Amino acid sequence: MALTSTDIDRIAKLARLELLPAESERMLSQINDFFDVVETMRAVDTTGVEPLSHPIAAIRDIALRLRDDVISEPDQRDINQRSAPTVEHGLFLVPRVIE
Picture 1 (cartoon, rainbow, N blue to C red):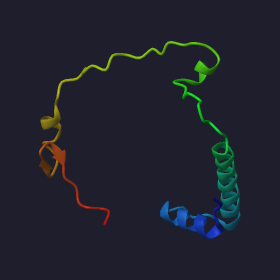
Picture 2 (picture 1 turned 30 degrees about the vertical axis):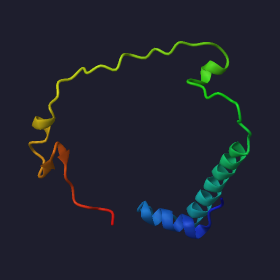
Picture 3 (picture 1 turned 180 degrees about the horizontal axis):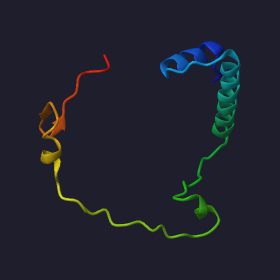
């Protein structure tokens, strides 16, 4: 997948960025180089390769230091939602932004 200068202009507009022509060309080159790396990685056959839980696990056994997932704070949802303009069933209600 390669982007064009039109794509870069559209992305810059959406991000509210003003790019000079030289910056736009440099950005186009860098993004397309990144996509080339992604395509190279996608071409590698990983059938039968187990995912690693941590990169170091590829060279030695490690034990991850994970803490127990326990509640450490009291439930203050009602207090936190008092300042919200609209709440329903414990959820913040916001105006629709995507149509």
